[in-house]
Image (tube, rainbow, N blue to C red; front, side, top):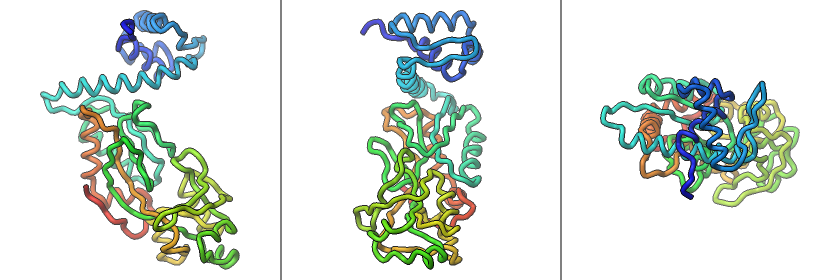
Length: 313
């Protein structure tokens, strides 16, 4: 175990993967291309595997390269954290901040991110939008904003907004298909469903007080506004956050079905891995999000309904 990769070699490898070319990575690192190439060759020789396939047009990762890149991001993030822990004398928050974000429509989320960057101009931001839950421990990402009923164990979560999921359908759909009287009736209805953890089609919806009921989706999407619009269009029953559909229920465009029988509490939270040394940029971002006005966060979607119940830890 004495012949471990050097940090400079891992950094050269990671930057080459992210830049997509040797010249781009060399420019980013401020190194001559020959130096970068030498470090990559030394890393491959040290590990005894080929990491990159080089062609005249592009670089691609081998299977070994894919595995190393995932781990290299974690190692480099730990190095940044250690460096940040001892470089706080001037009080300046700086460094690279990698965030995983849900693709929520509206300008509230983007406005918050830009305000954070204006307050901390020395922070570089890498923002990944997607519905799949990024493995914060194993991926190299520092922090995530997530909505859901359950948050992953092993992560620190600061809940910002609490709301609830409610089953809704249009009056036209209910007139045509009938009103479900029991959660079990949903198997006879057209259900508009999302993805569990953003990864696989949901097959069950939660019941109030515990348990779940099986559903079959006629439309399955990780874009909740599509499910809302499909419900408004009379295409079925959807289980959606109150903040997304409450206004439509109040106006009579949607009907809350199985009230008190189907649904669950949901939350919007900022989550991050628990570490002894939290990078200054991560700590600053978490504190910034928690302090951001709730009214601005609630405007994540222009069609929000009644104000969700705020929670302050």
